[in-house]
Length: 357
Image 1 (cartoon, rainbow, N blue to C red):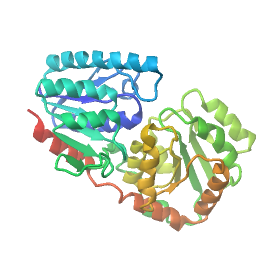
Image 2: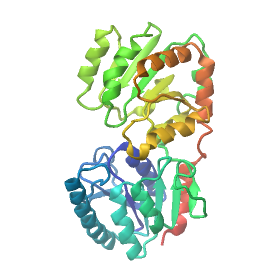
Image 3: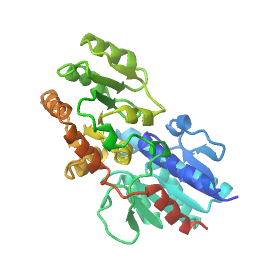
Image 4: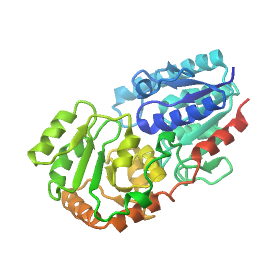
């Protein structure tokens, strides 16, 4: 039996690219052992007979209190032993990590067991875990160029793996062809929702809402009722969903996407071609969301708006301009399609399997 271990846990930014690659390997006849955590998103979204999810103890260290850092360090040491046992049991020919502290124990154990390791970095600046994984990896794939501030043969700029469900989305040429078409605005707060979006967007949108504008808002679990009430207060007939497993359908419906600047969402927007307004999460580690969004903004592939005191004023002004300029939205949708290399899935699949043993 040919086995590949994938390490990814937590939010969609880690889990969805990893799941995408898992399905690619499965099509080639490999079985997947997925090293994750008990609370990770992977436990909810993955349901495949060829993927066996096993759990280890893992917690982030940065940004925590002293006591929580000590606890996280103990979990990290435990995760190394847990990963070692898992790898000895399943004897994979390759380990593919997608960052996060869940990946480091497996990378270290693989190194000592002489199992090849390849690593994928999703953001414009490499996280702490992947900075460690870099030294333990045979090959490193990066979504954004120079995320490790290095240029060598070990690092390849590949872009981010994107799920196949986005392959048949309406093309920008069709989406933005009718200047009289209604505008469909999709508001995404990430897999966990955004309290800032939930609090701010109903009031902000009330400044320009009209009959030719439709709103769909992903609020995060347990927030949908409260957010719906806010829209109703401003006489806005918005569709508010706690979460969606069919995000591809929502992207297909949308004309303008207002969202955070996580790598997975950005990569999906680039795959399908949609105008976007990116509002980076201001407390992201290493400010990676701002760096992600800035890479697009300097290439005229999105509009970047930060959370500041004049947010509402700037937001209303920017969206009003976009709503009255379909050509501008079309330009943004086409430019974002040129941001990343094409066929990341295929390249990572073929290149990583060179190291399988």
